[in-house]
Figure 1: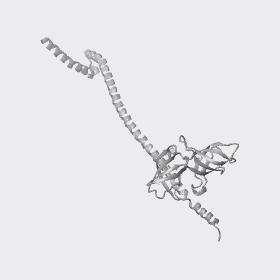
Figure 2 (figure 1 turned 120 degrees about the vertical axis):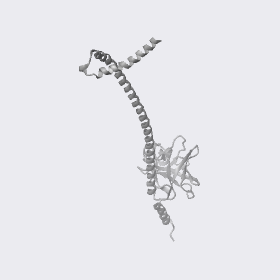
Figure 3 (figure 1 turned 135 degrees about the vertical axis):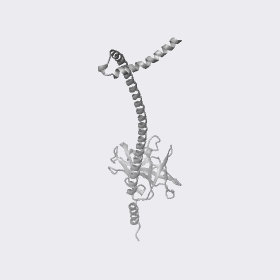
Figure 4 (figure 1 turned 30 degrees about the vertical axis):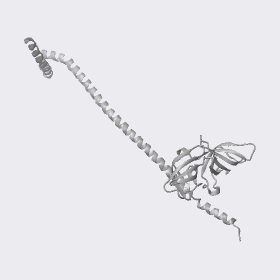
Length: 292
């Protein structure tokens, strides 16, 4: 029992003395170093080197860990900031596109020189009988009757069908019951654009085009202004197919509408004819009246 006690005491004393001896030997003046000090320094040097190397390694590992933790937090913050910026850019692009559409709508409203009502598209209904878009006005649709022209800066949309409250149903120009008098902008050839009513695609059939008239794929069709139903010169469609026969009076022409109905958002409803057309109609009526 006493031996064990002495052994423990010796270990404690040795554990306290060894570091003291190492420190004493390291701090002594080299001119006063004894042989025992040299032995101690020689023994302590590899131990100190190993301890310093281990300490540096642990310090580097801890530093890398802290750095990686900071990098991870920075990455998470940057990813969140990037997501917010992308969402903001998306909203700004959407607002810019809307602003561009509305500016074009205002420009067209001023150029028509007639009474128009703006409306927002709120729905579309396509079936085997009708191709109809429903639009919402900013007021009651009391003065919106049937068969009024509906247009956008891109071209002809169709005509009003019926109204209720502040909503109006618009018969699209591609509906089989729709029809617009058109001319080929390049050559002045006349025709009548009627919707095919095809449920699988938006398509116009141009009827009553003289077989001798020059019409080519890519030609732009615009409203003729005949009958003062649509203002003159508004795009209706682009010719995609011309079928010329060796017999008959007319050739068959097909066209795609100028308006992309899948992206239709705002429209203008023309509620009256342009002033110059109205005056021209009055002058024509007056000149044809019998003289007394």
